[in-house]
Length: 273
Image 1 (cartoon, rainbow, N blue to C red):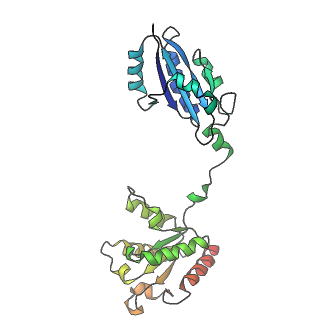
Image 2: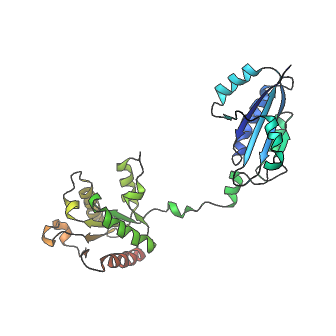
């Protein structure tokens, strides 16, 4: 009876998860049906491969139904056959192993390197080399501004980054598909200092976001003296500023060193918080 061959491409780095798939196949079919099953592994660090082959003498209709129902996402390789793998052994440096039953899977597929895998699994590597969590730090500075002032805001944000000051800037914090309201609330709640970049566009914004942010910081300041805000005045005459804002000394963008003054002020305030 002619055997039928299937080859699947599995995930080398996530191989511990792939064991479930392999074990399920070995549990479901005995050696009279599944006459061959094993792995070919290419340990090229820039393009690792983990190929599972399954050779059936019968029961292929059941197998295809089983895959379709239980593992529809598993990627079967087409137009690449066992003979092609054997011909590639030298150039690809494949290691190989075969399974008799599911009890062998755990000893062959391991987190750590072994005779088959030269490199640890992703889970093992992550336990050794921790991911840098610095990118996830909450931003202590919230930049409140009008979208029409983005060019100025880009300059301010760039200088803050060069001075190593974490800042919440919607341009880099709100991704497509995000809830704008949720992201804004998250940024406001976690911030220690609001930098309110007031401009004519800010005060005349039709959507009301900017005025709501201004009110948030003013109200929070009234209830908690530790929560500060800084007014960065882009182009609004003093007499046109909101009454509550006029009482606070602000930084005038028209001054040549205004951004440097903002940065030095933020550094001093952050040390006190």
